[in-house]
Length: 310
Image (cartoon, rainbow, N blue to C red; front, side, top):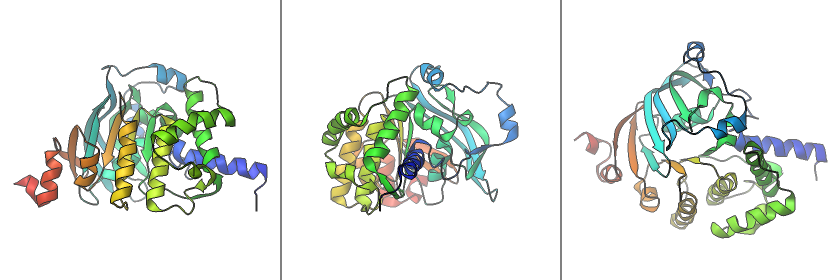
């Protein structure tokens, strides 16, 4: 049964905010920042999206800069991140590897403003702006994208409506005119061709009835539509067979050309064989403990984490 127009619009808005706001519609608070951190640093909060986008990072080519970041689970107080430091510049691809429970996914969620976590120390900036002074949807509109490890289904909302709303949110933030349905189709068609994706995706509801590989492809299509400057892909390879991994990796490689930044979270070298990182980091107990080139991933593949300590 077709939903009334008001309900359909409501669903579409909620669905778009799931990505554009990183689940902001499902949990309307951003990741908490301890009060003493809010008082510290002195910089007033910048409310204007267009003003934020006009400011480049002070160092010129730094996209994402994280310094000594600590965070805990808001509900239980369990400390997860214990001083993460990471800098990603334009055009760089980084990968973080680590055992389950090491803090990899928590790190990505804290960056995009997931409300289940509270920042207890450190700083994070995106293109020179304080991430923790921005709502989740503001971070997405500014060009920070997170691909979910397990994308949710949004019944009753078509991919076409969802993608167009995402696209127009970004365009408004950049001071560009919104696209009507016909204009958006012209914008989207080359991206489908570029990513070698079936146009039938557009007629389906968001992730409803999708296989694991289709959900991951749909995440990459969302990334293409958002045209984000900094993308975080959390275990984009999980649950994919060899063919699906090849297709998803090929699409990511197309999108990461130029001065865009990319952060991969993965357990496996097979993803890094397809998407070649400039730097590989190892996370243990909520902290990056080792950084190097792709040879680190090769050592992990051959001898596990014990091999790195040898």
